Amino acid sequence: MPSLFGIVGDIHGNFQALARILSRHPEIPYWLCVGDVASQAGAYPTPPAPLYFIQGNNESFDRLAAFRRGGETVPNLHFIPNGTAVSIDRLEVAGLGGTFAPMWYETPVAGLPVKAKDDKRRHFVHEEVEACKQLKNVDVLLTHEAPKPFWIDLPSSTTPTRKWRREVGKAPIAEVADTLKPRLHCFGHYHVQAHYDRGGIPTVCVNRVNRSYLLVDRTSFAWEVRPTET
Image (tube, rainbow, N blue to C red; front, side, top):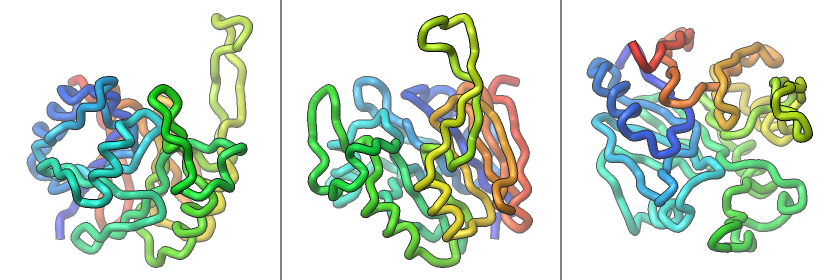
């Protein structure tokens, strides 16, 4: 069994930074990602080591659908659909990607509108939350949104030079984490590095891939932050 695995944050098409990180650590057998992998053109990487990812809110959702049904594959790239878990060398990893939108939350997955510029498939829904809660023996929970509470300094909508401390966590994400009680819960979306203990669950916001990443001990689940540029 490997002693370490890695976790990267939002990629947003920066495949060069991703490749630098993975190539720097040939001893790491697999990596996890908290979503927002695709470029603006909908491209996905062919990573030099296995990368398991959940969806963010910036993806090619048609390609994710193809990954899900097995109609398209990319070497070393593995998609974890919402409400499912994968076993990676006896590490159980669960995923709930996308963002929370109250007005769409009770919509069935199959009913989310598909639009060229406003694809509602970027949101997770209640059906997927309930599917997540049925999973067992989860070691690592990956979400794109933060669990509630999560406070962050964000620019004011009226005065961008000012910062306001806002609670941006989402209750359904906390509900999933509290049910699964993973050894580690990681999320992205907010492009900052932060961590806290939430009800006994080590919870980490992973920064963008061009800034930093995590190395995680497979046995203790202790983690450390490494800068992308050295």
